[in-house]
Length: 253
Image 1 (cartoon, rainbow, N blue to C red):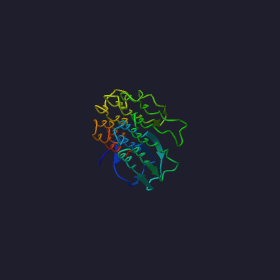
Image 2 (cartoon, helix red, strand yellow; image 1 turned 120 degrees about the vertical axis):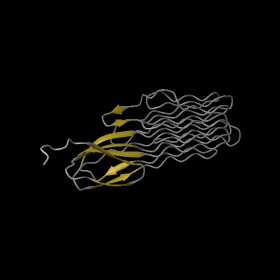
Image 3 (cartoon, rainbow, N blue to C red; image 1 turned 135 degrees about the vertical axis):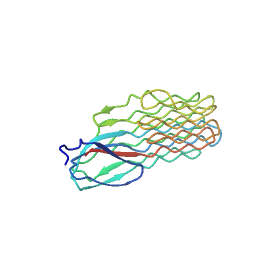
Image 4 (cartoon, rainbow, N blue to C red; image 1 turned 60 degrees about the vertical axis):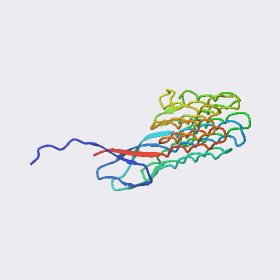
């Protein structure tokens, strides 16, 4: 006969797709970590103009959610922002959420899509959204001009208890440029690159993955990782989709 109780163990369940979670017996608090979808990269201009801007990443929520043992939580995992077709803006990412707790769980705002390339200028990078229960406006994406694309601003978005902003995207190159704007990882280090020539801007990185690379001239960018922005398309090319969201539930039992 055991003379001691086993130590409590941290347990986790990750959701890459929507589903449900039954709160185990004896559990009254579940930690929710989730990101919404990244914005899609903008398409390059259709008739020889600038490259598209990269999409922004989704924001992050980390929230201690009071729950009732035996209750069912409904988990919604965000869809990725759609890629911008040639001459069109990238789509905004979807929203991840968890419902069924004893109080409302905040939702992380999604990343906005990058703008399409214009006749002379590259498309602006997507901006990071700010909304919901948090009184913050997300950082704007880099502004496109007629020359080289501009990198996204340093990752200096607002942070609050339980919440971190997404990262904006880099802008596409204009018609006199030779490279699209790069982007940044969650930690502020430049990583995703803009496309060469009249290339697309890179997508903003999320807390869980890097953004997509901008497409080279006449080439499509790469898809963003989880919660990250997609790369913009080069001149006369489509952008790429952002990354889907993710939800991780943690509890001690």
